[in-house]
Length: 88
Image (cartoon, rainbow, N blue to C red):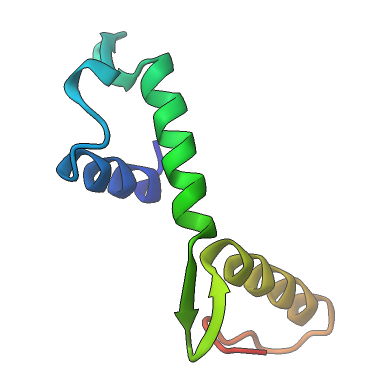
């Protein structure tokens, strides 16, 4: 799993949204089972699409990240310096 996913799993566990029976042991590790993966995907999607204000702009985290990626690509192609988090 990626750090963002690990952080999300821990938040979902601490809020009792993902439970012990949503995990299984295999190959020497602990993984989400099918129900756990479905629950995680639903909750992660809801989190990414929840309205929020970022740098004074009402948006969603998904939209904000998408715009940052597009701006990064544009800066690379135009040989400009990209400033992370800058509202373009």
